[in-house]
Image 1 (tube, rainbow, N blue to C red):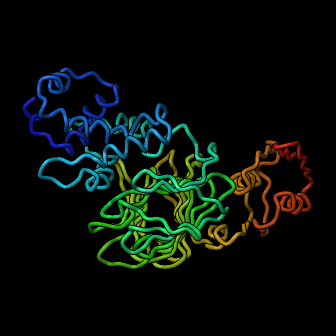
Image 2 (cartoon, one colour):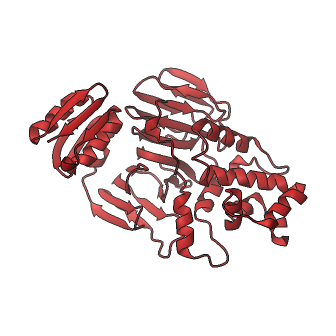
Image 3 (cartoon, rainbow, N blue to C red):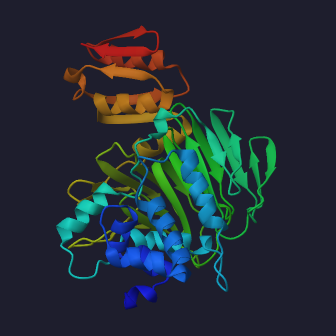
Amino acid sequence: MDNFLFYTVEDFAEDYHFIRWALNEESNSTLDHLYEKYPHKRQEMDEAIELVRFFEGTYDQLGDDEMYDLWKRIKSRKKQGQRPFLRKLLRYAAVFIGVAVAGGLLYSQWESFRQQRAFFAEKQQVEDSSRFQLTLSDGRQVALESDTARIQYSQSGKSVQVDSRQIQNSRGEGQAMNKLSIPYGKRSHITLADGSEIWVNAGSELVYPSSFDGDKRKVYLKGEAFFQVHEDKSKPFIVKTSDLDIQVLGTRFNVNSYQENDQIETVLVDGKVKIEQRGIHVFDRDVVLKPSERASFSKETKSMKREKVDPRYYTSWKDGYLYLQNEDLGDIVQKLRRIYNRNIVLDDRLKSLTFSGKLDLRESLKKELTIISAAYPIRYSIEEDKITIEP
């Protein structure tokens, strides 16, 4: 009890037993008593509970709108004599997922808990939504009308241009957060306040601040994006995914971190990136990539593989092409599902067929399937919204 009485919001959010209690996964009479009998601590505990639930849990109970309402409530709170709570939000995130568990908690127990409550785990998939929108830091939702929307923030972050529309962003200061949601069949290009450019692929989400405050530039990615980072040696740029932190100064690289994929892939075009594995692990290793190298992180084994590659095969999607080299048909079909937002059913016997060539994503899906079927003894049929590929 004495220790908890001196806890700050950060301390509560980093305490393993508080996390389990906040997620209703563990009873704790001490915390119950503290919450009921010490009103001056209740505010801090409430803020810590909301933070825990935002980063680690209740995705299966909360939809996107509810999550954003929760986020806005967190941002609106200000503790007397301290900076706004949101300014600490991103700093909490980096600590929270890699929290050091006191009392010698077994690695296997923590790893199981971490996997169950992974940072980006949520039932509602991006591809299940038809919404193509930008959510500004003040809660306004801006519909994106073109299939390849272009978004550009001013240097201050207080205004944003969406295609030809100029929009005032009323909370552009500090770490006010924005969210870009891209469903299947769409893509987007965004220029951040620091001049960095990001191409966001279909079925992806990107969370980022209106302007960068502090000594780091952090963005959060679920899905795939190509980054062209504006160099600023005083502020490293960090892409945070479910399992990895990818840190750069100024460079061009691609990150593929779709939730349904078994691996997280980082491909470096030029410059240098450092990949850090988050969480509590017995052997934590950082990987530094050189140009034309790919790092593949296995979500299952927590291992990292590095190899030399031709970046063109991993980055061409942003220019409207798919360069393929001995790629399994199953993987190709998964990409086509995202790009064209079509229900494609592939016969299991064909999944391991490999294909090399170039597909023009600006052409119709029917034309691309015709090209593939010309190379292999397969046929496709179209029935309303369903496309079937079979021997």
